[in-house]
Length: 117
Image (cartoon, rainbow, N blue to C red; front, top):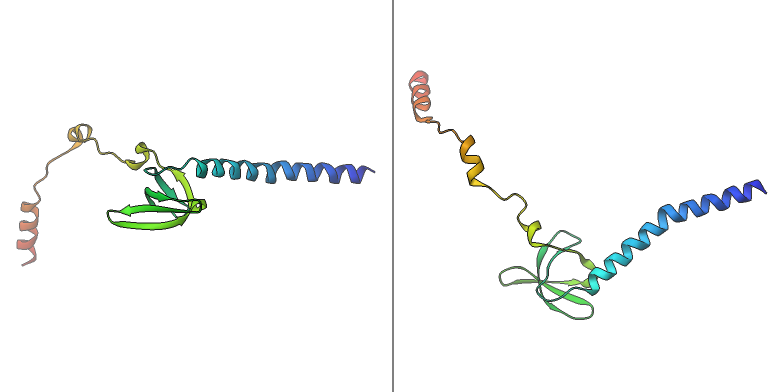
């Protein structure tokens, strides 16, 4: 009797740890795919990024470069890309100017060349 209860508890625990999170991910992905619109910036499951230019029930056309469109199944869209995600490492010139040091290396190269000859 105790073995049956232990087995039932283990099955319930495995279901809660494995099945429930997968179902949540599937529901979230289905909700994402259902909200896609022409003009959305997206990333596919393979990491290709682009803009949706045409859609039907099954297929999405994504422009990845000017004049270059790829066809994907709607399920291959992994996520929408926000404008903030596109510029990950924005370079702030004002902050880096304080750390910048100008070095003239032409003298060192000339001296090294004369020493080697």
